[in-house]
Length: 490
Image 1 (cartoon, one colour):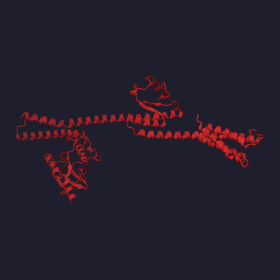
Image 2: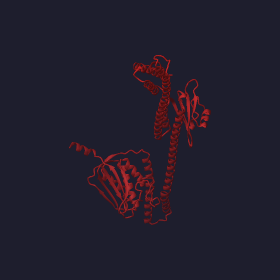
Image 3: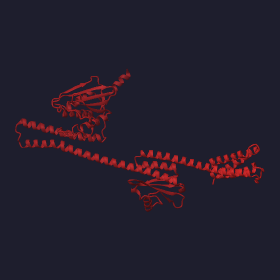
Image 4: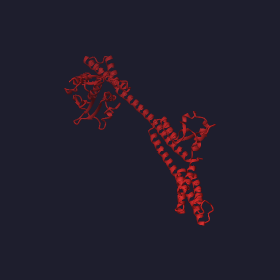
């Protein structure tokens, strides 16, 4: 029991008596009694019920002894004075009790408000938790700030064999079966191991355990708070488990879809040219093509089919290399017209029968790029234009500067892009027409996007108003070192 609150009540009663004793003839007895009642109320507010009761009894004695005639005597001769003293004592006790009860309710409400705020913060933080370790860290902070605990752990169903003493697997099984909070005393100490099952509708997510310094602090409200906290933690663990399960399922589905797409593309786009190669090789081997012109045509066809297979395999290998993240850009300052010219030269055979109209701004400065990769990107765009353009139709290639960006645009006169697929066309194994006799596995545009984005640029696609599709490559432009030095010298 704390002595100081009682001492403050006694001191206040003595001080009040000494203060108003010289004025006892000038102040009515009822007013003096109210002053003592006021002192009891103040004591109840500041010190609680016990000190208020002591103050009320001492105040009644002081009132009867000092202020009720005959003075300095407890022998009260008039009945009205006795009634006044008794009423003062009863009112003081009643008001002190009510005030103390109200104070306790206010303090309990404050504690509940603090705990509610802490639970809200806990729930908010748990919504951002990504792993069980994050949940354990957040839960430990909540328990440490709300209770005097340490050694907070979360035991998952696959780790019930690694339990702290004095908890045994059999004891844990009983706690889980009861579904309630349990307190297991630690032998030889006043501490206790508190265990709370973490249950949700789907089942047991684990067990929350921590060491409590004093088990007597777990009142009914504290137990209720722990059970609410356990339900919030259980929901967070279930959310993380479901998210991991969904992610794993998504990865498996994506892998299966990718495998099926690759097998379908290889079986469709490699089997046809391989079958044609075998047929033409058999024809040449059996001597059925005796005319030199037929032999030459078949040899050219064999070469074309071989080049088609080579491009398909090259795209697969190139995409695998780019997706692995092992690509290092060998940047150098290159004139734009040289990069475009090299790309056109590499594609001269595929561009045969498609006149190319080239427009390059004469004042374009050099750009810092990996010329090999950028030529590959432009070749893929040109190849895409030739495959989807009718024979004899032209291809427009232009290059210019828009503010701090280099824009290279390649447009064809093909069927154009399906509506709404302008962005999806750059995905892996995506084609403008899913079923088509045009060879390809849908990797060319994906390679273009990967190369352009590696340079800090972007590539977009849109349909032409007069028919066909346009692909626009945008690359960031910087001032070449030599030009920058000349400008600094000027």
